[in-house]
Image (tube, rainbow, N blue to C red):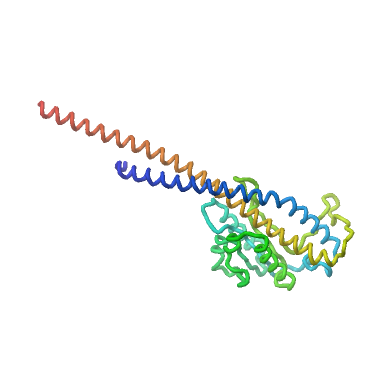
Amino acid sequence: MANLKEIKNRITSISSTMQITSAMKMVSAAKLRKAQDAITQLRPYAQKLQEILGNVSGTLDLSENIFAEERTVKKVLIIPISSNRGLCGGFNNNITKRVNWLLKNEYTNVEVSVLSVGKKVNDAFKNSTFNFRPEELGSAEDMFNDLTFERASEHAEFAMNAFRKGEFDKVIVVYNQFKNAAVQEVITEQLLPILPQENETEKTPAGDYLFEPSKEEIIVDLIPKALKLQFFKALLDSNASEHGARMTAMHKATDNAGDLKRGLTLDYNKARQAAITNEILEIVGGAEALNG
């Protein structure tokens, strides 16, 4: 058994760690509330706009809507979204695993580029042959330093322009979808080409729209805006999921540190009691030797 000083030092160290993890949990809980409000307010609007976008795309000719053009998939752009910081359980690792699974199983015979959003996933692929980082988009961690619709639009517009020019035949977004503070689900979502909304019973494009003022203005305004909003929703989902995952991880870390501290305190008390008992035995033995 370790001596009293070693055990006491470990208890002090664990107590300091508990203070840090507890403080990080409180900070993440405060940030989670704001991030959760943002995604829950945006999600119904984004989902309805996405539904309308799918319906409208199903009624337009490919010559009218280049973003719905189905092509032979030869070049794929994967946009994984992670966080800039760690200490959030398997949040970032799950994204990396999903991208690696896609590379090994879904897109083995096509040319794949990985455009990372977030420092952690960028670190995982920065030395990979799949890494793709255009200079005009800045560094991977810039997005979450200032998460706004305008910043998200830059990435979405880059993907849209690349798809329009034929540089990529398919654009995939991989992110953690926020369910609640303890549950985040990894989602693989197709950004481009736009998938037409299908009727659940007939499996045919749903909706019959009268276009006002014109199809041209819808193509110019609504479709790009909807695509940018779809990407922004993925970023907000990932942001809320990050804080939820970190809060849960720090809560578990605090609980585990508490259990470890209690076990070490018990060991400390046992060692201290054993030391006291030995001292008493030495005193009694010395007294008996003197009396003998």
